[in-house]
Image (cartoon, rainbow, N blue to C red; front, side, top):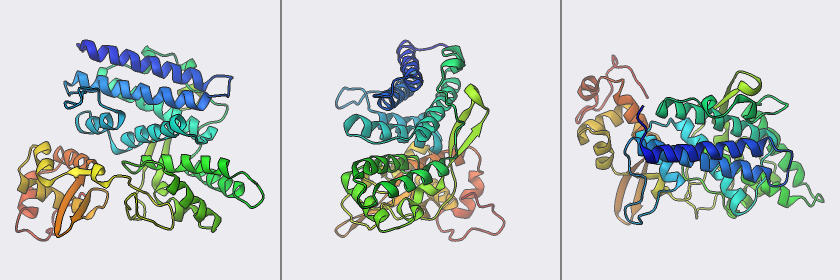
Length: 361
């Protein structure tokens, strides 16, 4: 592969930051260790994503500002051009959300959660390096220096349950440990970024969760979407790989930043940022006509999925917008489905799916 010069520079910066992250993880020093790990992991991925975009000749600069794009924009563009899966994008967003609190305020990331995310980061870094540059991480970093732990990675649901119980204990009357409990709450809120775009942690979120836990509400009610998060672990020792996965869970109502709800749920700070594709823009990006895009949306039941579609109401006007999740599902479907059959059965004027057509939703 002929590597573009700027892509090579960015890739080297990415690998250097990953080295720093692994060195910090394996450090004997506890003071500042978690912060160092998360800061360097986030920077490593931002550089690697930008290297992939530059290599594919996708602009990595904001045309209006003349500045390099930020992490979230990198993830969005790579979901479009580098074909990041939803799970991969979620891993990156969760690392960024954990890093954000560490950098700008504070949170508490347990050793189990830190190790699981660090190993998942190394696995994803190696996957991206191989997919985009035909290289392996072992070519740049020996296995012996990767993040290691005396315990194997544990199931993410067990780790979340342990954190939730620990928070409840810290909030008990007379403990005087609320700042520590709130720090742990912030971390659980941050890892909701695995399953929802645009999640940011606010003091209102933390207070809402705290009230729910003190009221004795179960974890599934307070953090409903964390119930769909899973981990796939393979190998052992220094060669273990961790990938986050998602299963289908109960539907969750999305709420705006200023809406008051009883439990935490999943709060979208800016719904307009999440649902930013108009129907015509979505069709243009997919390189299909508007009617054919509509047929594909019907086939995939995109308009029925709240994670893909949202209707904004401004006075008497209603505007339908779609998320990157909708784009990714439709883009991937175009590679496998027979659009002639989809058009015949779901095009304009077709109201029902014929019995003989397989449902890919």
